[in-house]
Length: 472
Ligand code: NAD
Image 1 (cartoon, helix red, strand yellow):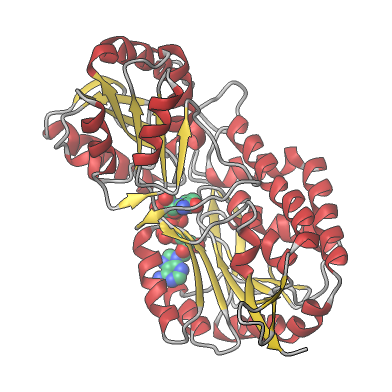
Image 2 (image 1 turned 135 degrees about the vertical axis):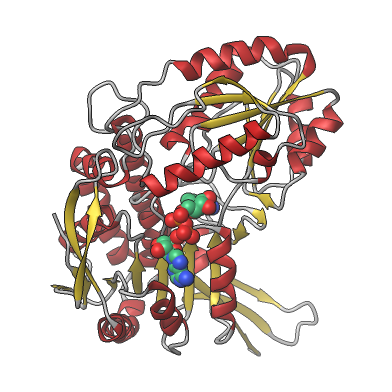
């Protein structure tokens, strides 16, 4: 297990260490190394020194490194999944799913590396030629959250390598071990020294701010909460650093009265419970049309009751621990508040006694004014609201500052697409609970973010467009 910092191609000791906990019982899994100001500075220097040579490498060279890393990740799926489950708490089926998803970003971007397009045209007036090319932005700072410790790292590292950018990765303090293992894989895959550096700052806020004020840093790619994202956009403004922001969600689900109820139940269970609900794409507000409401609620509650809660690595467990007791208690508070505001709990809704950051699968019916609808729950709690007309369902779904993903369930394609087009979100899933795919553009509108990761757009978050005009 890697626990040290990775700077300029070497594993180095930090200025101090901090524990990483197993959230299932609070025991310490490892002591990881932290970076003081000098070590953070050394990481920026290493990335800066490696940038010019790295940008000159052949796309095929970078593609092969990513492809090698993909192969190693696939071969080590079980090790990676166990590490994810240990430090994050999630159940092994979720952890295996994440390990596979994370590896796919390396495969996808190995293929994208050799397909960056340019453009060569005559200007409309005929006075010149227009040549458009793309160049790596340069040193990039990548900051990732705890909920997908592998997937959020490879979704940034993959396109950065493909584009020819060097980088500094700052994983979440709760879940750094998976990221360090991925770095170890990339080292074995042949990544040259200095291209990828990893630091865990001793004082996150001030030290990240310092890096964002270092003129050698050109690009920031952040995944995390909207609150921290807004703060970092302001920090990045001083140097007009390019920002890619994957922020919080408050995903609505609209179940129309012609939906296939069993398909809707299984889809929404996936959308709600993947990762124990700790996903930015998690179904956060479920709106069901009146005609099918009772039948849907009964079937959905039964499906939520079937989850087996326990230590993520134990056989048969489908709902693991939350990342920490502190984060779990936030979910319990949201549920208690919702109940005070009139929510009717159909199942779950009670914080378990004893050790471990556990919370049960919970279903509640609420009215459209309930406080819980304003919050990203980030846990296994499903508030359900009954609505009348399609227009009302759409208006309720869009009544949020967030716009990452929406879900629509309907038996008629035209109605489903009309509803999807009306959704104020960067992504819409029709009759499906999971649409995340490394080959598709992932990202949000409104306060859910800026830019897209994955798909054909992902590499462009690490490329500048350059126009060269000349006369022949
Ligand atoms: P967070 O914002 O608390 O932390 C994210 C990262 O930012 C961590 O590495 C953290 O250490 C770091 N950080 C915290 N304060 C910072 C500061 N002042 N300066 C610099 N870095 C700082 O988020 P979290 O609790 O780890 O993750 C949950 C959030 O992430 C949810 O809101 C979720 O919706 C969002 N998320 C979004 C996506 C997406 O793709 N849109 C994906 C996963 C998670």
